[in-house]
Structures are given as structure tokens and as C-alpha cells.
Image (cartoon, rainbow, N blue to C red; front, side, top):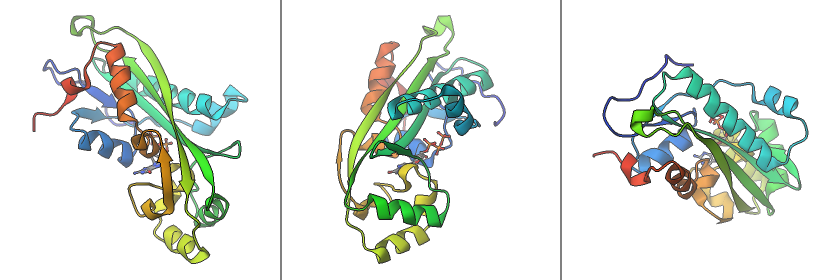
Length: 219
Ligand SMILES: Nc1nc2c(ncn2[C@H]2C[C@H](O)[C@@H](COP(=O)(O)OP(=O)(O)OP(=O)(O)O)O2)c(=O)[nH]1
């Protein structure tokens, strides 16, 4: 993990994004939010193995909670910490990142023309000090989107996988990158597909008395 961080001394309740995800970071930046970043470095497979048989929604919520907890411990306190995790569920099977071109090609051959559900878990740890109205609360929720994939040709699959983009994203696709043409429809909050649901974040922050507008940067 990077060196421990501490929030600015100003009054803004500074959000700490416990994620290495460029998509999540870009989502918060485009929404005008001020935040710090401190990725968690966890063995996600080991955590899930220890947890036993969980539903996909439970898996992403558990990993989001573990990430938020680890990042809270690594910072020097005073933040509202957000951990997230995303996975694609298709035919009852949970799929994460393909990691290899072969796996991505095989993934797309099974995805094309079909509908899956992208689950994104979100977990908040309110680690603000008491004088900053910190509540010590720790809680989360999952946002799920139904995704229908286009009927890609083998040539399109090979061309998309050759870009490298699908290899390190949940499900092996993006809606806001080169994968955009291959996603026919999304139900629910599209930000949740990228990995961080902004309306859900607004509701979670409201639980601890923070208006999302209070986190806006002064551009
Ligand atoms: N930009 C973009 N990224 C996506 C999309 N779908 C999935 N992703 C990315 C977001 C996350 O970086 C990644 C999901 O994997 P994880 O939830 O394990 O997060 P990741 O390992 O990237 O970072 P983290 O564990 O939070 O440090 O896939 C999309 O449609 N657009």
C-alpha cells in the first residue's frame, strides 16, 4: 500500500477511494468530487475461499467491505472510506477479470447475444473524528445492472481482445471504452457497470449526514 494518508485539515469531509480502479476514479472525478485514493492490496480469491458459498451479491459486498476495512487501517484516520468490488453474473456463474486473451475470447464467445447481471458492491467506513461529526458507522449496499451483449462476430471479438482492454475489467467488457458498441442495453445505473454507482454513493453518504454536493471540488 502507498504511504498512509491523512485528510486535508480543511472542513471538507474528505472521501478516500480505496480502489486502484481507473474507472472508479474517473467516475468520481467526472462527478466533480474531491477525494484521495489509497488502493487495497488483498488476496480476493483467498477471502472468498474462506467465506464459503456466497451469492454473487454477497461476494462483491464482502470484498468491498474487506477493501474499505484494509484501507481505513492503512490511512491515519479522518476519512470517509469507500471500498468497491464488481463482478459479472451470467447463468448463475460469477466471472471477474479474464486476465488472458484466451480467456477473454472464450468469455465473449459465451457472452455474445446474451444477458448477464453486473453486481457492484460498495462499502463505507465513516472514520472521521468525533469533532468532524464522525459516526464510526460501517455499512454498504450493492447496485446491480442487467446487461445485454451484442451478437459479436468472431472477428469483432478477436479485434476487441487484441486491444487488451477486456483483460483487466470485471466481465471482460466496458461500456465507456472500446467495448461500448458491444453492449446493447443496460438497466439500472450505468455508473454501477463501471464499478461505482453515484446515486447509491449519494444515499450511502446521506446515511452519515453528508450531502454529495459537500464533496464537490471548487473548480
Ligand atoms: N471504465 C470501466 N471499467 C470497468 C467497466 N466494467 C468493469 N470495469 C472495471 C472497474 C474495476 O476496475 C474492475 C472490476 O474489478 P474490481 O472490482 O476487482 O476492481 P479493481 O481490481 O480494478 O480495483 P480495486 O480492487 O477496487 O482496487 O473492472 C466499465 O464498463 N468501464
